[in-house]
Image (cartoon, rainbow, N blue to C red; front, side, top):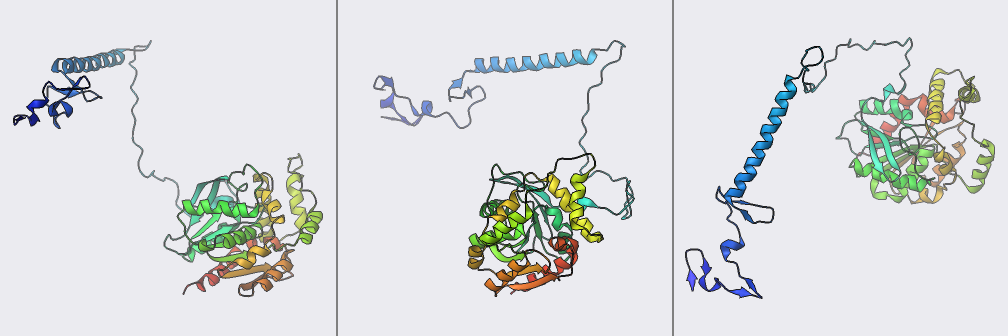
Length: 389
């Protein structure tokens, strides 16, 4: 009972199961390459040649109508008898031609040497995190391991690290400066974060940049975030650097809050005193100090609520500092109000290296890093060399 002509049992022909005729093999599966006069619809059912011809005729008809409409449109003229020109699209060149003068002395319309945010050339991007988009600047050779992550003080932004990054790049060191959420060009989080939550959010940035292990560096509030990160993500921290470690105790937190008082209003006023009041507080004529103050004042007006400073005043660093297992460096400025805390941190972690970056006679200690970025980059570079085995 086997028909060798089509490979099906002759006994199957005409048989039924539950009232449904059994289909032969050639009915069950269409040929892998159907004849030209056979086509299948989306359900696998073949369409007769006549139906295919009707479909093809319909397609040709649509093409003919479209061509006719195009011909009519092209023959139209406006009220002045001028035929409308069809728009042409040209592919832009891969690299636009630069026609301006290529010189380091090009000043545009400036009459000074102010460079502003233009020192942050290249490497900028955004990472998506639970706290929103986080802005960063990633520069330096990709081959450098482990890269350095730079966390700024508050209020400030990655501009604090601009010249530092440029110096590190010249030294062959890769660095990533990050705008803390709520500062610079990073999104404001939907609620007030804690320092450990800022550290948690940092993990999302590192994951998107595919950075497994980093040297985590922070200044003031950034040092608090760095400490929480190194303590809670030990497998991601190759080393830690803290400049101005806010090792508060509960009494100091209360004293500091009373000393600072309410934040100065940032509502613009006609005489510009909402800006100048910040300068009068420092009382300096040092050009480097004035530059650093300017960037701090501008950053203060770019941000929203000062969530970083609030989080830092609620963070008790001592427990996390004890648990860090990577090499460390503590820097301090003798005239900085956090200097006594840095000394306590130094005693708590005698295995960490220590550098007093500026002495008691230095003015504007909280901005000393921003005032001497080239020297600061040299101190960091020296410490990084000790990590190479």
